[in-house]
Length: 119
Length: 116
Image (cartoon, rainbow over all chains, first blue to last red; front, top):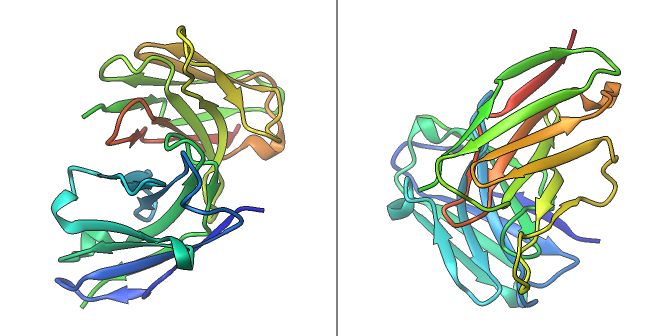
């Protein structure tokens, strides 16, 4: 059974760097074709795609946030980490990580973690 | 970047109704348009997806395992629809489309389906 779980701080101050960890279970990010993505959702608003990392370490980013985002994987620890620098209150959202068997659609999602940016 | 415009933003319907939600892409995306359902406080659930294949022709569209057959996705190029043939009480939720033709991927703005 594939599961993903996000973890990280619940509260971040403006200008700080957010580090989120997605712990993977039931699959490996070394499996050919597999990818893990990060998607966020501000309260009451739509989903926004942020970043994607493939099994072969190819990485893709939203150009809206590209200079602020870094996605990495640690296959040995079954983790994917997303860092977002220079956090702002508009970055307040629920952040999801999600599994993609082919790097396109997201079939299994984590429960999400709510991040509030406030001083 | 490819933009995806979803309509309507909200929709009221009754159990048993047939409803259609539309997504339009800012450029051709073949059939690479996925659909998700989201209920309040929950993560999105994949309903319909498109697979890239090594064969020529239109990439096929699939219903995710466990999704009822009353959900149907159609369209290609820039115009797509999600149709629910006979609404059930558990279908009242928010629906999102997502283009997966090329990164950066993008989601539609969502359609909130409410009970009339």
